[in-house]
Length: 453
Image (tube, rainbow, N blue to C red; front, side, top):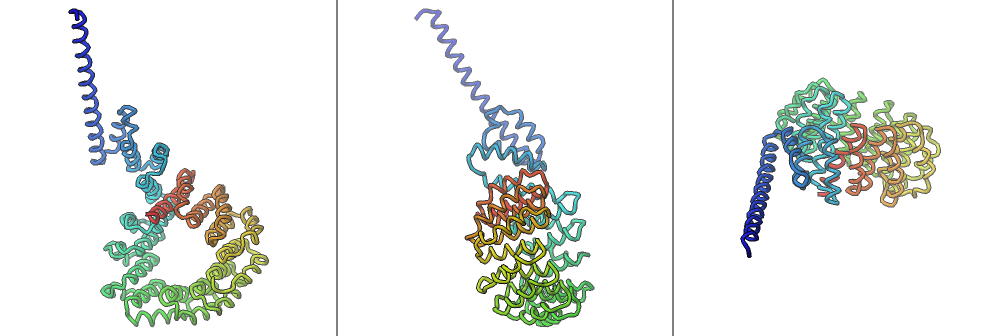
């Protein structure tokens, strides 16, 4: 080897060593940078996290953990739409859903509406959180107890009442002092479910509340914790001349003691007030006696459509009785399209072959009235196992409806019909142009994924 060749070899070795050292320095720098970005995230410096992620090279940014970090950062910044776009890229790369991230994305579409200026949108959000029925939702529901709307606070209270941790929370019990009767009613019902007799001191004063529905709820709670005084008051209210008091008491009696509610339902079914007859009609679905069929058949011909809807829904629950005959007659003769929609649902729940009523379903699905199409979507969710495929096909078409409330009803129906298999369509709902539809899709995703787990 001559001197010149030796020099080139030496230079080559040096160059190679320099490249190796440089590559190690870059790798160390990149690792250090990623750790620093994670530290920023832990410190809730979310905007800086995005800025630092943008500085990384393409390979580093594309790493799965960094993609997840970016999605979570966008969610913390209240940008669920941007996070969803990045999530779609992640799912495509993985060729499957990342369950944890998808839950976070779904929740974000719900939570963002809890701060919306529109009462209706906040109502959609807290309805979704209420139906989630997860301990993870307790903190959000507790925040809802501070909302400026009594209706929204009531939804939050109802959600907390469904959860053991929610019922035990001090914030929930403090809401017995809320100004809205709906809120106090929800809290009392939740406290009754605890069966905790030590709560009597909180409940008993509300037996004198000026609002009738609060007094009835207090009596129900007292009864549930073993106080006969509450049971007696509840039964007295079940025959009260005040229609609101009577209706509230009968609903409570149906939930508390189905075996002894029959006389109250019979009397209520003949009441002059339609709201009381409607409560009775709903109650009969929980008491599958042969005599209920005759009473519900009569209520299915009531002058008021809401009473007929309640009767149709209850007839669909009488699986051990021949309830199809009055329903078939109603689908042919009832003048109200919304009533016919729920009659369809009842027949499908009882196993009536879909082909037998497909003509009525098609007519209802193509009506110009959004309320009817909404009612049909809700009703189709009740289809029995053998009718689910055909019902799903109609509901899927309603998901393409121009009206948000129809799409919301369709999403809920598909979740009920398909269970966890509805997740792909619920993900599609997250891309909807309407805030309420997206929040509903997010809420149903949370519910479905909780069941799946």
